[in-house]
Image (tube, rainbow, N blue to C red; front, side, top):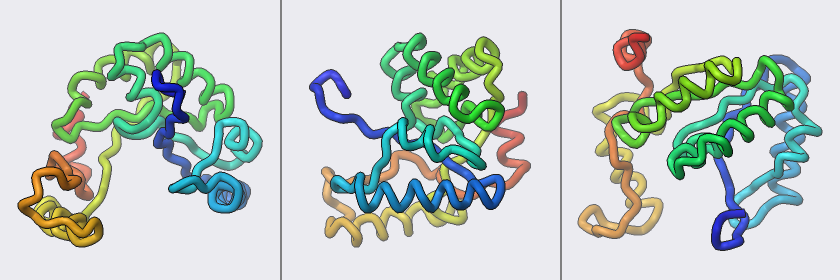
Length: 178
């Protein structure tokens, strides 16, 4: 729950590492749509723990619980949550760092510190919403169409960066030289 007492949703990345993981993910997805649907499909952490076998978990982007807590200057809360995920996934839980030129510059040093202090491995990723950097404008148009907004509407949802494309290994290495 957030400060207003409302249920808060978080992003979390789940990847299948084997057939059991595929079955676990299908089970979680089914439960999310059938039992957890409230505007969007969702599950809770108890269900995740129950169906985590064969899955790899990443802490996610700025909309993940670890990042959200760090953005609120709650390092202890971020650490507590990361350790709870490590308890569920063991060596298959990773702290995710990204750099799209957004708030990640602020929290990445804390994520690196968190990784060192907890022993949770670190993985550098990039959100991908379109194939190439040049597609950022097309993505903006598609979002306007899907939300029935115009390009000149100042209140429309808009990505605040053009960095959410499939970066090459060279681009990722340049972004994260360490």
